[in-house]
Image (cartoon, rainbow, N blue to C red; front, side, top):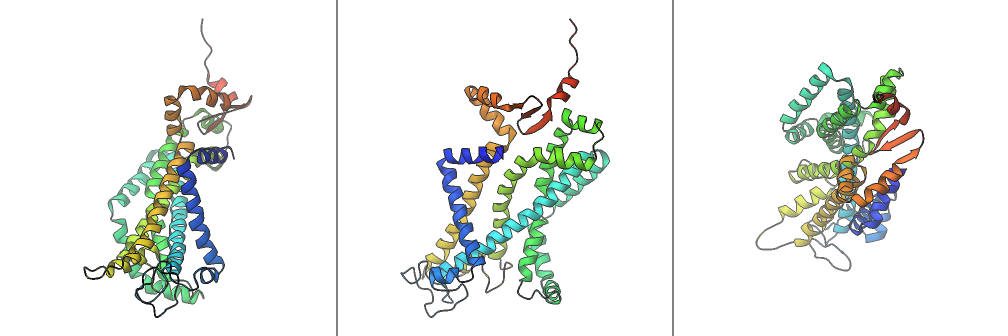
Length: 349
């Protein structure tokens, strides 16, 4: 709760972060409302995302705020529905990669030795592979078998291509997270509070869950916000190549791809590219700026550097570090003061 309060304090003081957070909440809220309430988009624009009209390739007007595409679809409805797909793919795949990366990195860093070497060599081998190319090959190959499996399970309304994109993007985006978490665990497990927990006979699971994971939460949140834009870009790139979500579904990447196919020197349908591309670009920028703000609050190294540049603030921060006579919180690392006193050697006068 303290970290969350610090984050909102930083956001309130930075107008850029306020704008970024507001924009993300607005886009996410509109996409969620359109998903939860099926008629929200129709009430907002007057058209559904798959409704075909006679107004083909019409520019922005009162009736069609963003214009229409080649099939007469209202571009506002398509952009709003594309936000659902893009944000759903990015958020779900990021959670998959986060779960795998954090678990893998914590086990490797805490175990150490030969097991750590084997696990990290496997990550380095995976790094050398063209992951996005492999994802495209796997998605196109397993499309029909996944559709048959979903049919057997009674999930005919679920797009098999969408399931494959979410799953395999999540399975290829966890390598960086695993290496970062492993490095932090290697440093944290040498701290006195971890050695004290081992001396008290606590189980390895309890040490990982109760002592190491809370001290990694800031770093996890930072790279979580930075992984979402990366996954969104990968999905957009796949959609641009024609291996994204199938029609009539649409993501921001497929909308940009459709617009690029209509670019010619004779007639410029600029609205097809400007509006979906602007929404995607602004969302990516807002997520990156928000990630930087989170890093300023939660990353111990950045916080320490900021305090060294402003020595007048160090006394206030250090004065707020001591929370109670029994616990000491220092840059996200929590340990009992009692164990620090045990580690101190008596002075010889």
